[in-house]
Structures are given as structure tokens and as C-alpha cells.
Length: 357
Image 1: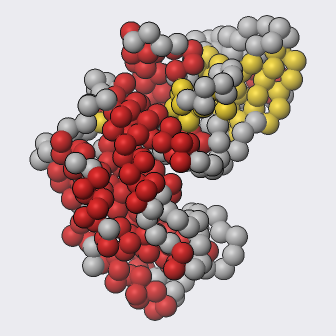
Image 2: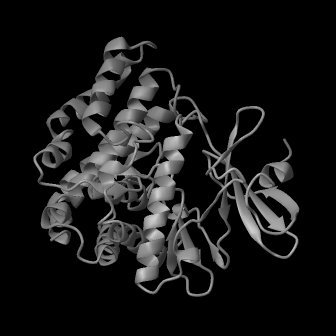
């Protein structure tokens, strides 16, 4: 079905003039639709390989955006710019299934705002921290337990560790012998992998609505004020821990090297960027985090980095089947980068903890 015809299955205003590819996302195919009198919409194909249950995925997004709209309106904000607006189909559904079985959805386009793929300044990093902290604050009273897990056990580090051990034991590509040092690195920290989930189980940490993909390019920045206005890409919104969202942002944003840097001597945690993010995140949270949640923010950073490293290493052992690679041993480089970052965090642990008081 033509993209124009797809769009006409939704309750859009005005006639479709053009539909062009849009953005830099890797998961979903995204298009910008321009209408006859200036309206714009985002048409997006849903990746059903990753998100297998479209009903649950869209139910999460509808519930969260509806709640956010009420919160934003209550505090005097503009709900059309402060969160995503799902456009329903003419049949009253949140998505449309075409004749090939592909699933499509439409969002209203947010005017006068843009996203950035890379942190270009400390202010960018600070703004993203405020935005994700605000996301926590706005959804603090949302019943997180009612959300579906769109990707089961996504940040269950203990489960990721079990998967890692299975990959080591199976050693399907005969690569385990060359990575004994990396395997030992993970095993030396095996007692820590369940720490945050154990605290959740004991009631020492609250279950929160978490975004689970806290990259800068998932924030819309106002073109005039350069302030963060809206968190986007809500596919991985699930029940989780605030430390996970914080930690994943630190993992990629406060690393002094690229995620796949082959020279691990270039890898370290920037305490300056860590401090900037802590300040912005806590400011955005507006006092909604508990003392325990603030205390475990460094552990969130360490565990998200270790978890990611485990996943890269497990994928290397399994023959590079999950993460795309562009060179030999790419996943091994990625895993070593993550482990070098974990090791540097451990050296700076006291300073990290002092910044989270």
C-alpha cells in the first residue's frame, strides 16, 4: 500500500501532499507527511520483530501520553508540545495493519522543535538530564505496575547474567578461550547483578515508569529557547527503576570515548559530565525520588554499563547474531569498552557517591 493511502486510514486533517523518509532511528521506519494546508504528521512502521505485541505496545503509549497530557495541562504547559499525540485510525484503533500484515501508526508532528544525534555541548547533556528527570516527576503517580513489558526482562541484570553464562557454557563459535579475562571480569561482579532488583523486591526502591532508551536524540529541543520540551520514542516505556534510566544515560553520555573504541586507554568516566547529569536529572525529578533512589544512582550507572558489556560479550560468543557489526571482533571491542568504563567507575566510586547525596 502506498504511504499516502496508509495515511488516509487515519483521522488526519487536510489532504496528503507528500510523504518522505524522516529522522535517524534504527528500529522503526519513519516518514514525515505534509498536508495541503500546512499540517504535518509522523507516519511510522512498527518493528514487530522487536515489539511482538502491538496491542500492548500501543496501550502503554496511549496510557502514558494521556496521563502526561493531564499533568502538563494541570501545570499550565502545552500538552500538544509536551508529549506525543497518537492519531487514531478511522476504525478507532491506535494502529493500522496493511495487506502485508505490517503495522503502522501516526503521531501529530511537533512544530518548532528538533532532535540532536550527538551531545554537542554540556548544555545539551544537562537539558537531556532535566527532560528525563521531568519525565520521572510527571509520571510519579502513574501506576507503573499496569504497564506491559514490551521487551521482557529488558533491564533485569540478573537474567542478563544468566544468559551470559549460558553463552559461555555453549561456546558455539569456540571463542571463549580467547576471552577468559573478560569472562572473569563479569564473574567477579556476579554478586552485584541482582542488587537493585533485590532492593525493589524488599520494597526499598519503588517501581517507576521508565523510558529505557535515554539517549539525547529521544528529546525534542525547542528551536527558539533550546529547552527540552518533550520525550519521544516511547516504545520501551515499561515498569522499572529510575536508576536504570539514569544509568543508561551515563553509560553512553559520560564516557570519554566512543562505545566501540578499540583503544581502551581512551575510555574513562567524565566526572564533570556525571555531575552535570546528576544535577539536571535531580532538578527535573523535582524532589520525587526517594533518598534510596538517589543513593543508588551510581549503582545504576555501573550496572547498566556492566549489563551492556555482558550483552556485547555474549553476542560475540554466539557469533554476532544480535548487534550489527561492521568489523571483525566489533562486539568484543564494544564489550571491552564497557568493562573499561565499569573499572574506571569503580576507581571513582567515592566521588560518584558524594555527587549523589
